[in-house]
Image (spheres, rainbow, N blue to C red):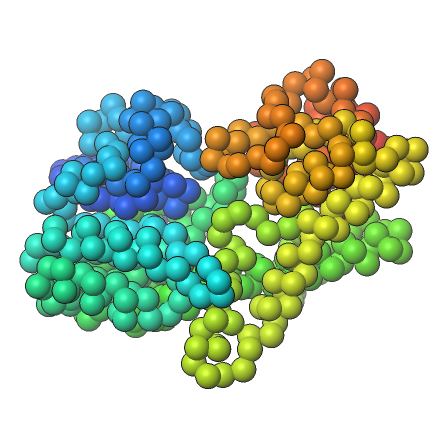
Length: 427
């Protein structure tokens, strides 16, 4: 059942400061999931410590560099100026916490979830647990992780019992980078707990951070909710990707088709093609679903696996379509000067480099990625755009001026539907 905790986010924030919340809240992981959560908790009046194993990231964040998508340097500066935010790689700085939100990513490796990083975090947190403390797992993972994996580690390491001595639950992350309408504070938050006391406390904590809290009966329901949401996006993106392939074969613009279909007022939600599997979350998250089915002895989750196959081959489709587009302009991929706006999926720049293209890329998050050998990182300046034989839009981020990209470039191959014009070909 949803709980409307504040109709006006500004009023909700003011209530938090007026109440003088001074509880210590720790966020384990200061990446794309954890840092926005930490910023919101500072706004709500908590004393926040971010814990991250990446010492390079810790130094940059403490120096005021917003090195994570979704958080601006202005927001980070306000958090530091409050005196209630700091980042550390040492779990000793988490001691005395009241609430801990764990955002450690859980990856699929060799066909199964790799729970090693989560286990390492739990083992460091367990000795710090006290009676009454609250731990919430935000990681997207397979159903049962909170109760069957995290709970025993915390109980064994602390000597306390979840649901009685300390409070434990799961709340899936919901975020769409670049969406100006739905931010953390106004997006409904699903919460769950091990026992009624845990659920009440976790709902209260998130009630300070978001406008609406949605309670569910157990962490398993919460964990599976996250997988359903990601699988829904994954499967429908695969359908849009298949449409782009078919549309290219029959000479139609898939983006125009999608826009036309979007006028139907019922039974349709628009999804757009993508150049492949974005790093790091979506395809790995939804792979938990077929793994869980196999683990339970059931049949394969065929729909999700088919979507994996379609989306996993889109990088090849991008390279193939780009080659055909260059051929029509009497050029080969080998030797062409190609400017990529964005580096993900990384399979695209890797393939273009192998084919002998002179590849440059503009990528604000290049420091977090490992570009292939032979690729040069540049700024998307006017001269760079003008000199390229083709500019390839891989990123959908708003950090690029797509009107200028279309106006300045000789030819644009757009995989995200951000450009229009006679010199633009869209995936």
